[in-house]
Length: 272
Ligand SMILES: CC(=O)[C@@H](O)[C@H](O)COP(=O)(O)O
Ligand SMILES: NCC(=O)COP(=O)(O)O
Image (cartoon, rainbow, N blue to C red; front, side, top):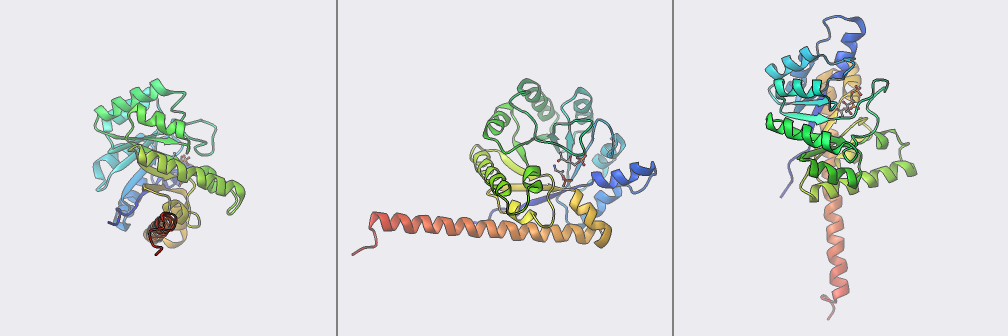
């Protein structure tokens, strides 16, 4: 049976970045979200940062009213953010680490170190009806802690892979970490999403990882949309994701067949 196709969550933070740069009312991320849905986005991701550098609480509240798909609200584990999520009740909340001075999210959430706080946040968010995901590095201790904390979903931070020079030892090692983490998490019963720094040249490999449910992509899509429009930028990304998923499935099938051939050879089942 063919597994469900990988979903695409479009992150619209960077539409809001442009708006905030001038303090204007345009471009409106809410308008972008509706266009993204029309283009085939399976969900809309927004990161409400504590410093409000792009998305504003008004955007989150309006999106909750108008989205036809579902909102994935990325936020830090703070009382202020938890109270907002409890008020708005987005379909998904992804807990992320946050530093004021960072250019973008650096590293995953330390679920092991902040276990009590994170477990209690998961409990509150689930009581509010949100699916909770934890944005973590591809690390088995963090995955096991996410499971114990009561998060049904994780999002693997692909930033280190995206930043490594393509084909380099670092990129290969990081890809292997992501692959092992995806296998570990899926076999533990977690839903596995991935994202950060994904673009048109690296997304196929990430979509080929075993068992991925959804990819969240923002910066590359919004940047490409400047030249080709949001609809084409999203549809191009979706085509690459499908191609990557198909390639991953073919590779898994090949590996499975080889395993069987080896078993038959070693058991001597086919020798006469
Ligand atoms: C958590 C994550 O990976 C994204 O939300 C990313 O942080 C995009 O937003 P920024 O550009 O604010 O980092
Ligand atoms: N969680 C990752 C995300 O939402 C998008 O990150 P990016 O594509 O803007 O780097």
